[in-house]
Amino acid sequence: MPAADKVVPLEEALARAEEVRRRGGRIGLANGVFDLLHVGHVRYLEAARALCDQLVVAVNSDASVRANRGPGMPTVGEVERAEVVAALGAVDQVVVFAERDVSEVIRRLRPDLHVKGTDYTPEGVPERALVESLGGRVVIAGDPKDHSSSALRAKLRGEG
Image (tube, rainbow, N blue to C red):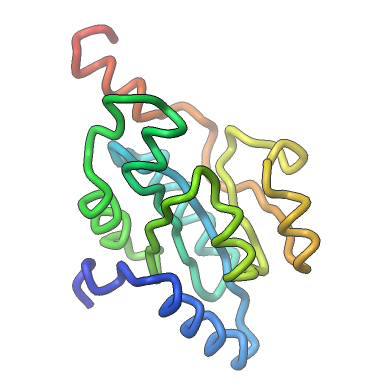
């Protein structure tokens, strides 16, 4: 399937998730900006996919990134970021969300697992209470946080 076809509206991801659940499968949700894709992102998403039967990745919209990180961000637009993430074999669907955080996606998708990277602890995930109130759990996955888009940007500017 072409990567662009894996970038879907939330409603379509919800329908696919219900189909997987009817077959007894578990839904995982990962989220992030994924501005400059790097090996840390790949390892995080591969580890997340190993924990579930379907992995949905929620990518922050450009407006959401600017609201959270300021003007001049992101480096890469939301359409391209979503398609690059969708091209990874570990990813089943990608949805783009406009809110400042992923809470609305969690409320609607009701993932069995909300998977965050190793820069978090289970207790430090902002959406933890919401996920647990919906019957899911928070899981930390991926390799140590030795990679970042910020570090990559600095290196490209000759600062690293």
